[in-house]
Amino acid sequence: MLLELKDIKKYFSAKKDFFNRTLSYVKAVDSVSLVIDKGQNLGLVGESGSGKTTLGRVILRLYKADDGRIIYRGEDITHYSHSEMRPVRKSIQMVFQDPYSSLDPRFTVENILREAYRLIDDRSNRQEQVAMMQQVLGSVNLPGDSIYRFPHEFSGGERQRVAIARALIMNPKLLVLDEAVSSLDVLVQEQIIRLLKDLQKQYDLTYLFISHNLRVIKKLCQKIAVMYKGKIVEMANRDDIFNNPIHPYTRQLLLAAMKYKTSSNDIQFNIQDNGKLVDRGGGHYVLE
Ligand SMILES: Nc1ncnc2c1ncn2[C@@H]1O[C@H](COP(=O)(O)OP(=O)(O)OP(=O)(O)O)[C@@H](O)[C@H]1O
Ligand SMILES: [Mg+2]
Image 1: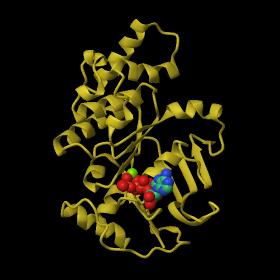
Image 2 (image 1 turned 60 degrees about the vertical axis):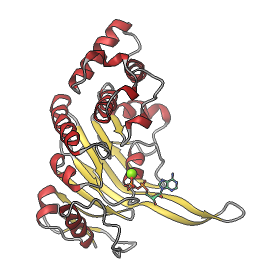
Image 3 (image 1 turned 135 degrees about the vertical axis):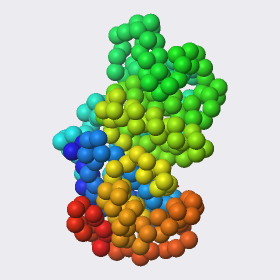
């Protein structure tokens, strides 16, 4: 088991009174439990505002969970201190939707990659560093001289490759990709998905692939978790989700995906506040 989440909660205060006391909460993540096994990519799907990004950020400890536990490679990292988190931070990397805002536009690719590289190796000289950077750029199919260029000098797809290269330099085990291909056109999406498959073998990676797009998730993920209003409503192997969806929300998502609509915010579903994920057989979990 690579990662296990147990009853993770993350609430944000939505309304405050005059004395700055919280009046109501947004339950962005509400008792989420899941397991990610090594080499078994998990696709996390759900409409806008369902809590996907918040969950990703909790895993990276960019947000502190209000409740629950995070077990990574057998260690309970929930309350790790900043220094205890250091090796974990390298081992779990995140790639975001818009690399243009996550890559500093004032830096060349060399500087962007060096910032990451410094965290794992501060002894090599520049020549060795550049060789290493060019090797990583090669593995995301970018030419070695990309190091001299700035983020705005790349296409969207190439920029996302730079962001992936920056994550890879840390030699991570788990890569959280948050809508990483969503802003790219379909052909470029395909290229990046193919690249991610190759990299997975080469670098022994596991992906948590966050997307509102089931078509894309289907291509890369063996397991799928469906999130709605902060809760996982259904989780199963890819084929079980596609061939035998049980929760009405999952069915709605699948219908929307077939019609090539990207969202299904139009219908509301009732979910129990204290619902539990129940195994309907063969690891096909449904919220009841
Ligand atoms: N920093 C924050 N402060 C307050 N509320 C937040 C914060 N971050 C997220 N939220 C709220 O938590 C809920 C979940 O947001 P989140 O960004 O995790 O959704 P998402 O599934 O990633 O959506 P999208 O598909 O649009 O990226 C939303 O209602 C959002 O408004
Ligand atoms: Mg998001």
